[in-house]
Length: 267
Ligand SMILES: [Fe+2]
Ligand SMILES: [Fe+2]
Image 1 (cartoon, rainbow, N blue to C red):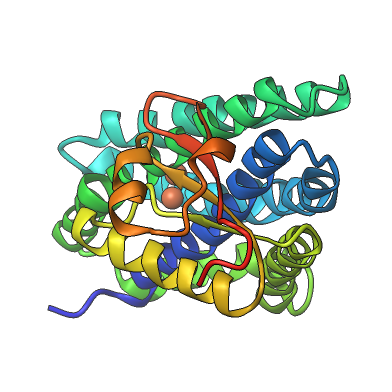
Image 2: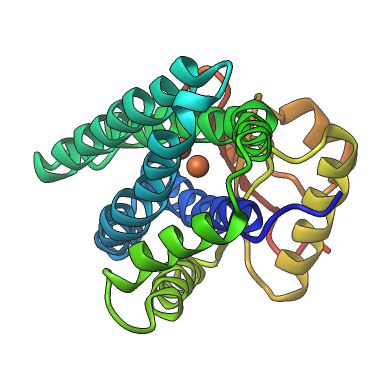
């Protein structure tokens, strides 16, 4: 059965949040592993605005309004409301802690680690919503006979309260974040990718393709976000890998960042 429009919209917003979150993690961990502050300086102010407006005032507000409307009708209504209200407060506090670390001038380990912990928590939360909570909403809404248009209208009012061209402005903000990261990191001849959430069997291919692009474009380094230290895999798959310059640090339970350099002139 086809999802109602309001549910597709929530899934779509998660995709937009994931793009921004990925950029934040890449910039904080690259700042740390490369020792280049400019990366986080360029990205964090934009993410801060995105977190405040798109995540806080828009996406969370939609979910929480939905929980108020549907929660009392759902069998797991208590859990649904808890997921939305309490988790959102905790996630927003985690981000505020990251900002405090940044404002205090901690540009290195602490900031990167806070970004990784925040990233993991956000990913877990969205996964939980996608796998169980949204289905609960859908069931409760159809059992109670709530018309999809009522929810669509509720969502539309929230969007309108945030000013004209909202979606366009927010997508522009995310694209700017991505461009800033790319422009800044390219200045130091480096590329960055995050494969922590990519399926294991697809990761190798993605890393190999990125390394190929790095060599073809004359860059010399790769910042890789992964869920483990990848040194033996790199030795096996990449002949130009310079082990003497390799650095890897664990930032959170599931997130590692590595700095991978390639031998000069090696193709
Ligand atoms: Fe949420
Ligand atoms: Fe969500």
